[in-house]
Image 1 (tube, helix red, strand yellow):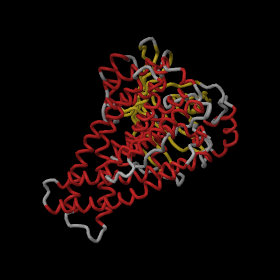
Image 2 (cartoon, rainbow, N blue to C red):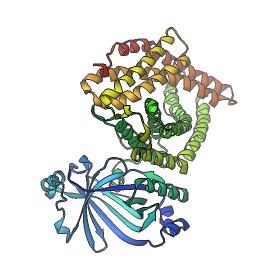
Image 3 (cartoon, rainbow, N blue to C red):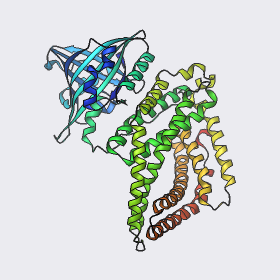
Image 4 (cartoon, rainbow, N blue to C red):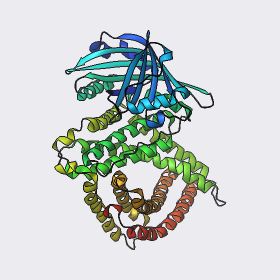
Length: 509
């Protein structure tokens, strides 16, 4: 693509009431006493088959007072940067015009006649330029609405309230420093999404989770770059899931957030021997703390959303199941209250900000071992060989072990092994890795069913405590029901392991 202006910006969202009050707050008054309001109306355009958004581009026409400004934005190097191609127009009839990038201009020429408005953002913006630690940073407070139109002509509308910190001149690290002051003075959440994405998300049910940001590395990608991509994708994923967890109480959001946190911890273990600072290790430690909080709520969600409904359909289901379920609902509510308190908190926002900072600033890379400059195709094989050897060694200690709970360490070992395999797999042809990844997935699923049974047995004992004999009988029924499922899964493990062990690791070919 051609040369556009790289925009580095940290964005935060909050309730419209809290955000609207910020310009008059003591904090903003102290750092930006000379701000001003203006009206901004931005209309976004695309083709019916989304030729622009499908390529990660946004095409916008904005009314800024008496001015008309066309902008095309493309994805930047990370979740908090964008490449912007902007030009002022005389009239709406001039839209769209070339932006100066050959690839984008080709799209504009090709689809000019089929462009249609797909979304509109209308906000009152208060903004000011702040001099902070030698940098110039624009602070903008936006309060208004996001609107989108479905392909069927349906209209969708929601409030929009954001605070943006955009680096005008200086070092990105100063934006992070100012952001931490902002977080400490206002109830805000980090957002890595665009305003257009907010509007387009209105087309889907609010509890639909956003798609995951996959990390794609090539054989030539440096190991350090793979880590930066992982950190960037993790922050974006956690930020997107936070809203669905807090506002919609979506059980799947808890599950996906735990996956993202576990992946961060596993990748940190991979890179730990090559890092000389504790920056990433500290993030992994915080990730474990949040994962532990999420774990209890997730377990109760599975029990109430999957296990108990499955047992209720049995002809032999005891009458005490309803009482057991009612007690379990209370326990889940308590666990969810702890989750909301932890995730909808200033500390969690700072945690996400630190992950972004580790990706963008990457202080850890300054003292890293030279091995991190190796391409993935050289860096990954010894890492994966060592992890596979450790997993196979543990499997031998479980030969002949019948107790289900004793298999838990093997399940954890497989998870720790799979995350680095997933990180580096895109450096290898899909045809070579397909069978290996499939065998690994089948093995993990079998161990997962065993773990579900062990956890369910523990939870129903908690729910039945002091609830009387009917609840105790129901707990025993569920425990037996899950034990039968686990036994069937256990019988499949040896075969699944044999299939997996027979696969030649794709990174060794």
